[in-house]
Structures are given as structure tokens and as C-alpha cells.
Length: 544
Image 1 (cartoon, rainbow, N blue to C red):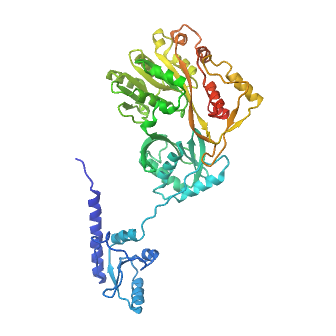
Image 2: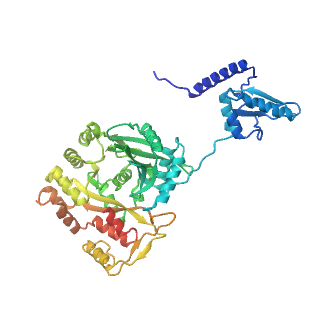
């Protein structure tokens, strides 16, 4: 049996109880009682009769203004001081005005005060990202956060992170306070330092909404959603929450995922035409495996989801196995796998293959069993997409061989390995052209020396680089991020490593073979982007 709670009915019962108690108290004091429920939302206000502060202090409110045929009427409560009533009677009588007091309930007083003193919408200053060593900005943001009311501070923090385009919020306990940092465009920036009172409020809200304990002695994972209203447009923000106990308290990291399915499109990732053509051609086949590799925060999930969206048609059955599910996609069956409770991707994959899917996405290949099961699925008529932790495509291919072994049957399974990074994009409106020194020029020439013949090679005798110029809109001179991709297309030459035709399966040997067959490395892709003025060499080296 389900118990349905009628909130309006409960509120009406509480109000009735308050009115009855006030009626009894008025009878004892010999004061006329008035039930304002039929009038409190429509009766005309009497501005100027009393100051707002006087009303709050005296728990008194004007009801009607005096005229020739009636007296001034004031509502008092059981908390109104009798000394105030007597002094007002004396004042009005001396000035020849008639005055009357009636007793109203505390609920009626609160309702009327909301009309006399409507709550003001507080607009707080937007959070700004501090530059290195900029303690003034951190101080200003800290002050703003300290003034935000306790019931709004957590939502304010989430709203501001979304407004800044942050991918993570880090809440870190330190000896002398709490540090808030946000990751924007892949770089972590200090935002504020808070006292422990605000920290408890934020962690309390986080605990209740992400269903985690703020007193736990072990790491926890949680999930929550929040609706963000941005200039009248609503969107849903997915948050993955990780907490861990530290020396000074519990630290939390909130990963933000903008729940906007329209953004999960290959067209919106600005993938260069050559790389995009390779992806389109390979995922159009009904079988095979595509691996995305890279560290956390390199955009692997976004690219995989964008591939799924491109493949999501009514004639295909698509299943995903995820830990956890980061985006909900219409028309795709998504299955959460809780590996912390002993479940494995390998076991789940064997089960879902019985459901006759055309395309399967495995959130991550972590072990030999999952790797072998995924490869077997890819050679028996399924397109399998997955992610893998490795620094480069050749390193991922080498590690996959270590997991599944050299096997001629597996040689045609893996069709494409993509290593991906995200680097900050220079602000075109402010970036500045600079002349590189001779050492930098020689390094660039060395990196690009063995570019494949079909790659568009820039003029390495005379080239310029660019550097960021900060502005009010972009304090670091960057705006957004761009994708850098290294694509290892598994052709006949690369298949030899899986078949066992080549004994040495080290990543370096695989990379050299792939480069001879036209692969552009991550570093080369980044340097070419820097020469085009899209990013900087410093940014490329930071990420790669």
C-alpha cells in the first residue's frame, strides 16, 4: 500500500491549529480575534503607517487606515509587547485619531509581512577564475560565497561551474580552510577558500542529493542531476561525485556532464576531414572493433557517444555497458555495470550478446576476459566500441596483444585505434603572432620530419607561432578546446602483429609501422595545430 502525502492538506491543518490557539489566547486576554484567511492575499495594504523594522520587532501589522467613520486598525500577535500597544494607544489618542487592535495568528502575520516586505531576489557576483598568484580574485570569490545563503550556496556553486564551462569541481580540505578549484578547458584553477561552516553546508547538500555519507571512512561514489536555467533555457546537468577521506576532512570531486544530446555529434567535435572520413568509413561496417584511448578527461566518452548517435537509427539495436552511465541517449539500451559490487564487463557482455545487438559499447576494457569477449563479439557480426587506458594508439595495440595473445583469428577484429587529447584553443580575437627562436624551429622540424606523404606539410623554413593574450572575457587567452587525434588504422601490415607474424610487438615498433602506413602521431597533430594558430606549443607539450 502506498501512502500519498497531501502537502496542501497538511499545511491547512497546521494553519487551522494556529488559528484555534490564537482564538483561545485572544479570549483569555480579552482582545478581539480576527481570522484573516479569507482576506490576507487580497486586502489592501496600508503603506507608511509603520516602518518595516517596527513591524518585525513589534510583531504588529497595519490592517486598515483611519478615516472619518472608522479607526486605524492594527493586527497584533501573542508575541506583541503590551508596552507597545499602550504607547501606540496614547500616541493616537493624543493626536485625535482612533485606534483598534485585533489579534491575528502568527501564520497570518507572516503571510502579510511577505506582502509588506516581499523577499528581494539577491543577485550575486559571478565567479571569476583567478590567474596564477591572483589572491585578490580568490578573496573576492570567497567573500561572495560566504554571503550566499546556506540553502542556495550549493546550487550557486553548480550554476557558476556550468556557466564557466567547468568539467570538474574540486572541494579540498586543508589545514587552514577549504579550497575550491574548478577545471576549465582542461586546466585546474583555484576559485575560493571557504570556512568550515560553508563546507559543512555544501557537503551536507552533496551527501543528501548524491546519496552518499559525509561521515564515511572509505571512498564513495554517487550521482545526481540538477536542472540549470540559463537565460530562460533549461538544461540538465549530470554530476558524478567521488569522495575520499583525507587528513583534514572529506574531499570531493564533482564531474559535470552537460546533458544536451544535441551536443553529442561528430559534426560538433571539429574533427579534421581526413580523420573524420576514416571514422565514418570504419563505423559504417557491421563488424569490427574501434578503441578510444587516452587519460581521464581527454574526451573519450564524448567521442564514443557521438559515434553512437551517428549510428543510432531505427534499424539497429544498440546496447551499452557503462560504469557509470554518463549520458542518457534516446533509442539506445544503456546498462549500468557496478564493478564495485563484483560485476564485470566481461560477464555482462556475454549476457547482452544473447539479445542480438548490432552495436555494443563497452565502457572500458580493463581485463583479459573483457578484452577476449569483446574481440570475439567483433568477429561474430557485431560492431564493438570501447575505451582503453593507454598513452598512444600503438601502446594500446601492444597492450591489447598482451591481453588476448597473438592469434590469427583475432587479426581482423580491431579495425581502428584512436588516441585522443583535448588542448585549449587560442582566442582568435586576441592571440598574438610571435617569431619562434632557432631552437624551437629545429624542434618543430624534427617532430614533423617524417610526416606521411599525403599529410599537408607546412613550410618549415619560415613559419610563425602564436601565444595567448588575456582579455576580460578570457583571462588566460584561450576559449574552448580542440580535439587532437592519432588514428592507427589496422591494415594488413599492422595485422601481422596480432597474427603472430612479427615477434616484436613493442609499442615503438608498431608505431613505426603505422607511421610508414600514413599515421600522424599525437605530437605531430598538436604541432600542426600550433602552426595553424589554433593552440600553442606549450599547451601541446602540457597535454601530450
